[in-house]
Amino acid sequence: MSGAALPLAICLMGPTASGKTDLAIQLSKVLPVDIISVDSALIYKGMDIGTAKPSAEELALAPHRLINIVEPSESYSVACFYNDALREMREITARGRIPLLVGGTMMYFKVLRDGIASMPSADPVVRQEINALAELHGWPHIHRLLAEVDPASAERIKPTDPQRLQRALEVYRVSGKTLSEHWAIQNASSNEKEREETGKGGKDVYTDSGNGLPSVPFRLLNFAISPSERSVLHDRIAQRFGLMLNQGFQEEVEGFYNREDIDISMSSMRCVGYRQMWEYLAGSLSYEEMREKGIIATRQLAKRQLTWLRGWEDIEWLETGKAINLDTVLNFYKKAASQ
Image (cartoon, rainbow, N blue to C red; front, top):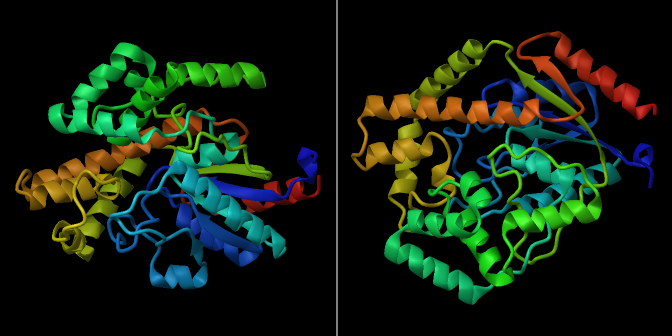
C-alpha cells in the first residue's frame, strides 16, 4: 500500500504543561477525531492529580483512550503500548474517524513511527541470575557489569533503571551480542539511515518475545506544541505543581504509600512528582525540598521531551496559547487528506 493510500492519524506532541489537552479538546469539536493518550503516567488507575490527568468534565467533552488501563502495581511496556495503540487506531479508522494521538511520552510516539527492534527472547534463568546479583550487590553493580561488555548501552541506561539494565545484560548473556550490535545489524539489513543516539533510551526498545514490530500502517501528521520561551514553560510547570499540591496530591500518594503491593521501585512511583512526594512521606525530604525537587524533575522531563522533538523529522511547531493553532492543524490535515 502506498503512503498516500494509508489512513491518516494526527500526533499532537509536546512537553509537559504545554497545553496539549486543551488543543486536543478544541480539535475534537471541529474534526471527527477520537483521542488516544500517549502518556506513560496516564495509563495508571488512581494516579490522577500528580499526572494532570484530564478532568471528568474534559473527558466527558473528549473521551481519551488508553487512560486508566493498569494498576500502579502492574508493569506496562512499550510493546504493550504499541499493540494497544494500534488496536485503537484501527478501530477508530474502521468507524470512519481520525485517530488523534496526544501526549508527551516520546518513546511511545517513536515506536509507532519506527517500530521495535527484534531482540533475543527472554531467558528466565539468565534473568533470575541477574536479579539475584542485583539483590546481593545492588543495581549499580549490574550497571558496572553492563559497562564492561556494552559501554554504549551503559552510557544510555541509568544505574537507577533496573528494567532496562536487566534486559540489556540479559541480551548480551543470551546472544553474545550487545544491544548496540543488534541495532547495527538491524539498521544495516534494512538500509535505514543511522539515527543519532541522544542518550534517552532511543535504541534500547525491544520485545521480550524476541519478535520485532513494524511501524504502524498510518500516515502520521506530526505537531508539537510548546511555549517558545523556556521561562514561560518553567512558570507553567511551577504553577501546575503548586495546583496539584492544593488539589490533594499528598493524599493521593499517601494512598499508594500505604499499600503493600506498591513501592518506590515501581515504574508508576518513579513518575515525576510521585517519587519526590514518596520521599517526603518517608521522611527523606522536607515539604519544601519535595516541592522544589518535584518542580525541578518536571522541568528536566520537559527538557528531555523538547530534545526529542527538536530531532523529529516532518514536524509542525505550534506556540502554546495561540489562537492560530487550531487553524494550522486543520489546514495541514485538509491538505494531507486531499493528497
